[in-house]
Length: 306
Ligand code: M3P
Ligand code: FE
Image 1 (cartoon, rainbow, N blue to C red):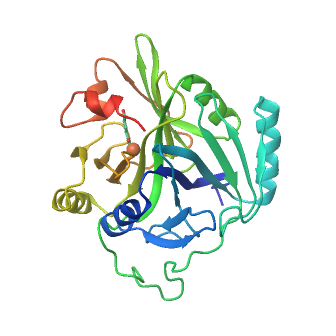
Image 2 (cartoon, helix red, strand yellow):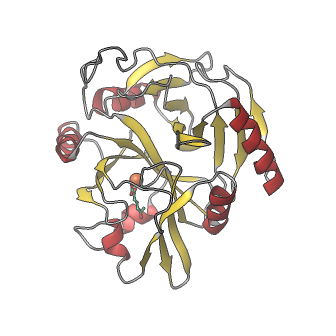
Image 3 (cartoon, rainbow, N blue to C red):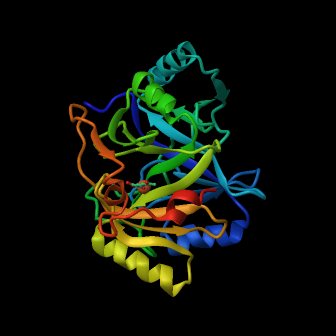
């Protein structure tokens, strides 16, 4: 098996202002499933094609944003090995006991240079309901809403992303699939631990610990169009799209959840292998990189974060 170490994004924990409206948005509109509610009121959700217990956690708070982004690693031994490497790199690591989130084993967490909390864990219970395993149909529960298949990646805004690049590549064994270099320095990086074009991305930004978006994968371009219909039908605040990225090549639409956290649903994107070179963009073509059809930057897209 070639995929070892950090396997994939596991869950994002978002802060939301109104739990009822948020659940309606993520289940009825985006097509996730509600798994359970914890004793502390956090609500756990998952996408239709995910085997793990949950991939999105909603926490009620008076300020929107992201608490942490967590990755699943292949084994308990990996968790211990990464802890040693993270500590040796200079970041203090804390321990979250098994069961602090229902369905998950022990986790380790720490804060990266951009101010975001990242976590790793090795164990997740199988979700219930889960995709079929024996003689599987293409789906068990009929997809609904935007029919999000999996929580795919996030884009985080914060300072010192060149330090994030160093950390993720040296300590967590990620690769940099794409980067944008502006005359005044590194603007953005797309990092992958898999064969996806990105599992996490960062944009340089003065304020720490900000969320630009959490992204969910859809089946194809038609599904992105259907998501656009849902956004208009239910008067969801739309940001941009449907359009396409030059960077990662995803077909995409961005919108806001009821708390002002930005969501992306997208399809496509190229296959990345760890021997591929990093694709690079400069200030002359960055507009095309971000929005391939519009070929220009969008001020709101670049400046609105939660
Ligand atoms: C994506 C993606 C920005 C580009 C974002 C790209 C903020 O979200 O999924 O490729 O410049
Ligand atoms: Fe994205």
